[in-house]
Length: 86
Image 1: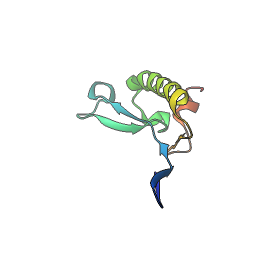
Image 2: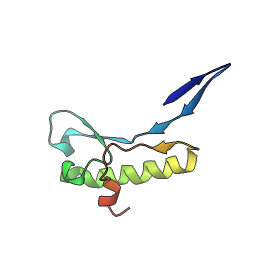
Image 3: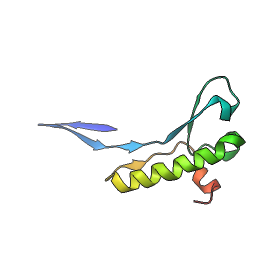
């Protein structure tokens, strides 16, 4: 996010990153894990992949409908969506 300050303060540039929460039952870990949605697919526990796919599809559908001029920022080159065939 970039703010510009002149006579008024305004948002000049903004991106978002989708982050998914893997619950302990899905991740096999003791605590919840926050995972960037484009983490390489082999880094995501098998039990969590379908839930992640649903979240990604639903979030992107919602954001593409309502966001104006705000792009998705990704952390990794290999996107999970590509692994799911999107």
